[in-house]
Length: 297
Ligand code: GLU
Image (cartoon, rainbow, N blue to C red; front, side, top):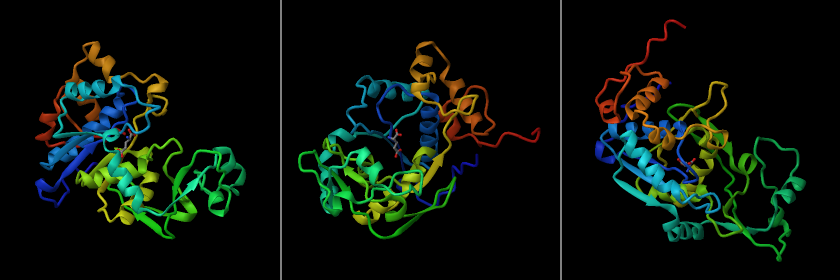
């Protein structure tokens, strides 16, 4: 993977990166690799680094995960200048929500599936039932954003670009769920702007959701950060690592006295860089990061 660590023309003082885990369990190695990349990317440019816990979906939060993630990051040798917790920032999301044109929606997934015409993408596009008088007053209301009639093009340093027509490819999407929880897309956009984030290094699974986040940035008058969507780590069968599939957690490795410096080395080599068998993130900051010789392939 060609990961351009030093291609920025920004002043070091302007660079702000972040790692934004959802505290839903222990970190696995794929999470650790994304965190390491995000950290390296910001720190190699002399930038600041933020740890942000994305814990709005309280049904998925595991209280032990905050400390476990903090300890795993420290154990790996990663540090951060600021920490934020989304569940403590609800006023900011409400303020942004109030600025957007939204409408209430009482549709269940089933209602939407039944009403949607032939799906024209991987995702279900909301067919506008509640806009056309389908609101069911006895049900709790979610709030959807009436998306502007525009196409959004986003570029990324590793993949893309991607273009999506908002009404056709995305549809009016939920900004506040019917249990009052703000949608991740709204919170991430508000937070990245509020925290001055300039570099978003995160997993590839969020790439196709990026145009809707950029649309929200534009509607709210926020700048668009630069994006690096990094490949997800897979097991030997090519299946994405996931806690639910039994991927080894960093927490377990830590408790079994694994050597964090060899984990950092293996994660970095797994990205195609030629580094010693043990190395700390801080040493990686000043290492030349040359690509491994793949000529045997
Ligand atoms: N909280 C998201 C996750 O853990 C990451 C969001 C982001 O980096 O924008 O997958």
